[in-house]
Length: 419
Image 1 (tube, helix red, strand yellow):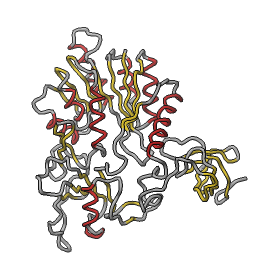
Image 2 (cartoon, one colour; image 1 turned 120 degrees about the vertical axis):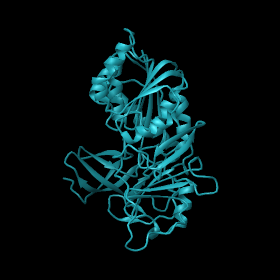
Image 3 (spheres, rainbow, N blue to C red; image 1 turned 90 degrees about the vertical axis):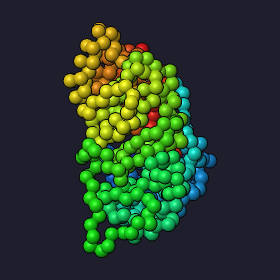
Image 4 (cartoon, rainbow, N blue to C red; image 1 turned 60 degrees about the horizontal axis):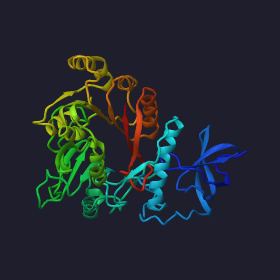
């Protein structure tokens, strides 16, 4: 009987969401990081989770032709990238296969998954530091970092110029890109937002004297007023988009600029709905194609930025959760349309990882909205929600892998539904 610490020879089977490969040992599934499907490996069992094992590769007995040498010295130690050992083109194939398999498990046929990708390195403009460094994989240790191959050159400039002890303590969020318009030309294009305080580059400002407190800011998402120290504006497809650095915004602006036209392709009409609207980035582009846009976003801080982004555009905003909107607001909107089959000509839905709330999915299935553009950062919940839409009479027209995070197992997707 295999136990923790034992060694075994396996053949890595398919890759699963998250980037691990799976295999079988004594009929029990084992999850193996840093493997490539088809490889013959010697592994050591590192954990027994009752229903499955975890293991680490100790020897590559027969490697994959798609295995390559990682280009980062911290690869395997840093908790970020986990697919650098695989050729970039094969990485995309594997992520597309994982996405397709998730839909097939729910009984949804997808056809070919279309991949939207960009540069494999130098793309990441959002970065998180803990005590000035990166958290070590499966450890509480902090790794000093002088550069990161997947980060933008603006982030790498900061890392190279600033010693770890001169970086913020605790958790800090960096956003850095040459697309930032809220920082004048001639300054480093980086904003550093600390969860207990904020400072913006250039970082030549003096550090607080010993014993002096930093200016405190509210915990994330508590307020409903824009904090100028956390505010950032970037250009996306020719438009200025404002957001909170402590909130969510995409880390790969190159792929985002390719995704926005795809989301908007073929849409137009009288009214559109943006569910889980965030800072309103999609609403801004929907407003070019529809007479009116309705935004639903429960996060008041994000909604303040959405209002700024939508200034001068015909819209209405609902600062409530999706299920609350469905219960209390959707019926009134439908009544205003004088019995029309649907109050909206199209909807963009971009829920959090757990997918749409049950009430929202049920409402959407019966809404009669002719065109749905569904985004997701979780393959399982996206496939689950797709299953319900198809049962309700919708047709899956296209499925895209939005390859926002090269070198990782993270997957975002876009689906077209119509009826």
